[in-house]
Image 1: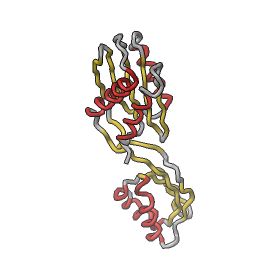
Image 2: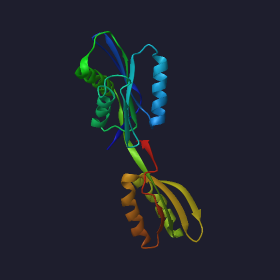
Image 3: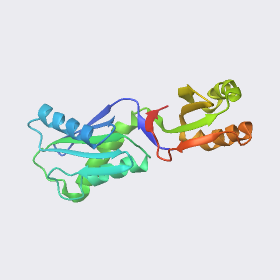
Image 4: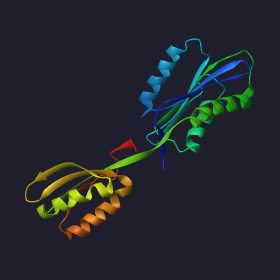
Length: 205
């Protein structure tokens, strides 16, 4: 199960006179991540590098910001991957101290900056949501409403006509069991209108 973070956390270290300021924080997408990186550059105008890595929406991105290729963004991204994080941006601001660290030293410095911050982080499970729509007999509406809590589901909409057209939102992990239970209760009288196989959103537990 993927996890995100409940709040931003920071780390700071000095390595051969270079100052590394790490941060990991929950962010939903690349656009938000780029805005955050721009903000960090404004907050640290004298910094030599602002490197970052992002895991969000099933996609990844990383940027070395002038450090030798593969010594900053990619190692930071691997830390996020290893901890199964989703919707998380890692950034490291570096103030160069005048002593080169070498490729191996840079990889360790950027990796450790992210790992140190994550040691203080509070992780929360990511819930992927599913939206379902169906038509059921009026006689089943009360039963359906009583079943919602047991499956972590909520009733988004209900429209009454010849039957009751309902829109439901529930965790993707619970969807198959809920559909099977409703089909059993309906005994062939439940008509599924749209089975949106793509998650309808993401949220924290």
